Structures are given as structure tokens and as C-alpha cells.
Length: 224
Length: 405
Image (cartoon, rainbow over all chains, first blue to last red; front, top):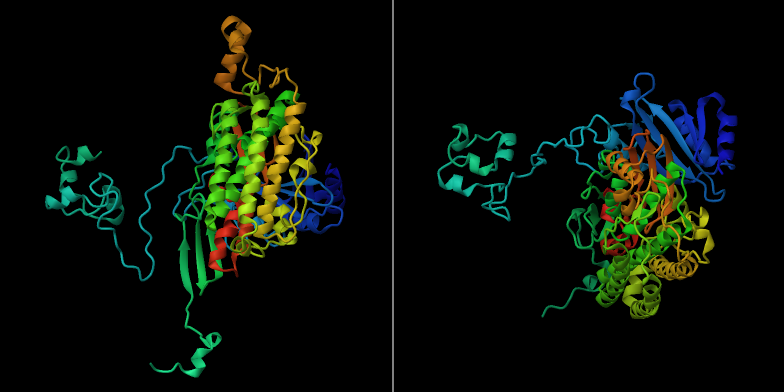
């Protein structure tokens, strides 16, 4: 259905279209990362391709095929409204290598590229606002990479400090009196010096409670 | 009493000092369906700048898919767009079938269409109902949800679950249609028509409701295409792109139905498009019920893909082996990668699947329609009033589970 686009691309770019395939009817062209934006602009603006409708941009991680082939596949799907044709463009980049952004070609690439950055750590040069989108900025690692174990837990994030902000913890709340609560009232009543839960205390560098420093005593076990 | 000074009596000249204000809307705000945060820079009541921050419902759908077998993705797929789970089921199943290169028997395809269109109706009912409710029209919301419950009754009778069905299987459906399906749908038709008419009579002549919808949240054709917008949001701008018509999949080319399109791309058009699409969906369902073969298999007869009958599992060695291999190893999908897409509640639901030939998906990329729709919503909201965020965001129909995955 979109073989026409592939032929047009081959005629226009020649060697720079590394490989084409038609698996189960999906026309795909593997292109050189250097001509990523050029090919994308061409398929959008060329009258015969006219792939004006942005569809998707994503990536796949293949760490095991290194070093023969670069690690990541970046995949772009686009379709044409008038011609009713679709094509998948693919390029391969190595770990740490960046790609030029497509946001100037299709504005819809904005969030798609942010998500690929968020999940794979692939940087897009020239992206107006490249920051994490689904995850939070303190997240360690890139979860859709194959070397990210699925059962990894992330460190507890301390409260963000903003300029001019007064550090405040709620004196009470829904978690009051619970083991995970911010304030351990029994500890405070017993004259302990710890104010917050163990997890936060470690991060903000608070002194550990006496009951925790001497092993096997008091409420430390009961808490856990 | 002192006389009012002359220059103050003209209200237009009253310039109150205002300074820009940064406002957090959400993540826990009644109008932010699901959970989503918007950071607004306001000048008075006008939105100057906007940062939409999704991700609060991120559960790692794509990562989770990479550890089970292909069949085990269905419960996750249910929870993408949890208002129309059957459509996600169908979309994912069709994607894997494309990768496998198999076709589902006719009866299974019709059954998928029927359940999927029922799910689409429930999706649009929720969106329109909730949108009306947020503008103060509570009664139509309750009527629509009542109707949605009738639809869920049918789905429950068919699949056993009201919301998260996990009913599709790779290669077909889990079970055959029940005997009551046709009668249940015929019983639904009068209720459906009555409810929709009543709801529209209540709100579509209401000046307040119209003022909040007409000309608000306008999306242009070019921008919609550029942003990758699909579904009702794209059709409201006047582009007749519906995957069911543009690239007919399943048995959609056998039905007589229309694709409603809007004109201006505003909230009003989106509301009407959804309302009309529900009627078209019901039309499809009624045709499908008539055309569906009364007997025959709903799944392919391939023991490498579909579980054998329990009778065979317990009584024949072939059945036992096939069952064992499917349970222990999963479906061995041949290596390759495909992009498959279908029309879900919010637009084009795409799955980019990569298989390495083992029984486990190598990569399951879900292209959620409302991810791109929400990205485009940014430009629909900036420059408008803060109160207009509610109807515009409502008509975008962001579903947290699908957007954040």
C-alpha cells in the first residue's frame, strides 16, 4: 500500500536508505541517523508521500546485538491523509548517541520524544523541553532498557527544596500514629530525638533513634 | 453617602491591579479525570502558559508486558482504557494475530465487533455524561451512566465481568456468544434511543451549556494532523479519518455506517460527534448481530495458539501436551515486528510489537490515542479562560490508564 513511498525514498536518497522491508504488509525503511530529519521532512513535504499525519515515535532496545550493531532502534510511524498510505521509518543509534529532534517537522513528536527520553535515555538534540514526562526527575535509570530489572525499587525521594521555601512537615495527618507516619509520637513522648520516619530520616541525615542504634531493643523490630 | 466619583462609575475603566499567578490544577482535582496535573500561569482568569504533566497513573505497562507471555498482556490491556476495555482487547489481539499471520474465524470477528462497539458506546456515554456533569448538568450524567450500566449488564452476561473483561484471546475469543445476546441487544435499543434523546433534549437547548461548548477549545485541521491527533478529536475538526473506514480491519467493511464529522473542532462538535457515533455504533451492532453466523468456531483451530478444549486436555495426550506447552511456554510468536492499529474509544490505538521468537514479548509499545490528543490540548487551552479548561479537557477524554500506561 505504501510501497510507493519506499520507492520514492530510494530514488531520492539512494544509499542512505540502508534497508527496506515489508513484513506482514508494514513497509519499513531503515535510514541513516544522519539523514533522520532530512528524510522525515521529505516524506512530510513531498507531494507524492505527503505523510502529514504524525502517528508514533518509539524505540526498542537491543543490548545484545552490540557491538556489531548500534543498541537502539528508533521507530517513527507516519501516515498520509489524502493518499491513505503509511510508512515506518527506522534508524539505529548507539548508547549515548543523540538524534536530532523531529518537533520542527511534526509538532506531535514533542511528547513522543520526551517519552522515549524518559524510558530509554535517548537524547533528542534541539528538543524545546526535553525532560522526563511519565516519571519524575529524581528517577534513577531508564526503565524500558533491557538492563533495567523489572523488580528494581527506586530510592525514596526527599522533599524537593525550592528557593525561598520554608521546610515544613505536617504536624499531623492521615498517617499520624502509623509506623510509616512522619512523626513517631511514641518516640517523641519517650524523649527520643527522631522526628520523622526512618526512611526519610536516613535521607535528610537525621540522627537515628536510640532504639535503633542498640540492636534488638525496643520498637525497632516492631516497626519492621 | 458620598457620591461616586465620575471616572469610577464607568466599569470598563476599572483596571484592577493584577499580577501573574501560578496555579496548580490537580493532580487531585475533580475535573482532572484520572490523575493529571496542570501548572497554569494565569493573568487574571486567562491562561497564559500551561504545563500538562501526565504520569501519575504510570504503572509500567510496557515493561510489565516484557516478562510474561503474549497471552498474559490481556489483563494489562484491559486497564489501558478502562472505560472501553473490549476495544483494547481487540486491538492487542489483532496486533498479535498480525504478527502470527493468522485470521480469526468470521464468527469470532463479528463477536469482537459487537462487544467492541458496545464498549465504544460506554466510552462515549461516560465522556459526554461526565462532560455534562462538570458543567452542572447532573441529571443527564446519571441517565447516561444508567444506560452504561445496561450495556455493562450485557457485557457481564457475555464475558463474566463488568469492566475488565480480559475476554479476547489471541486467535479468537474466550467463549462463544451466549444465546441471549441478540435478545439483550434488541432490548437495549429502545432504552438507548430514549436515553440519548432525553439527554440531548435536556442540555442541547440550554443556553448555559451551549455557551460553555460553542467556540471553546478550538482545534484546527492542520494542527491536529501535525500533533498526531486521532479519533473524535480529529473528526471534530472535519477530517473523516476513522480507522474502521480508512483501513477497514476485522469485518468492518461489511457494515453500513457513517462517520460523523464536525465543522469547527470545538467542544460542541466533539460532544455531537460522540453522540452521533454512539448511534452509528448501535447500528453496527444491530447489523453484526444479524450477520453473525449462528454456529461455528470463534477461535482458530490451531493448538499452538488457542487452548484446546478441556475435554481433550483430560482425555487425549495431544490435548494435554498442547495445553502444557501453551501454559508453560506461551504462544511462540515468530520473530518480527509489526505495527497494528485499530479504532479505540479515543482514536487510533496502535500496538508496535517486537517478537524475538521466544514465548515472551520483546517489546510491546502501545500508542495511546489520548497521549497525542492531550499533547494537542495544550494549544487549545492556552489563551482561554481557566473555567474553559473543564469542558475542553473533558471533551479531550483523557483516560489516565491509557495515557500514562
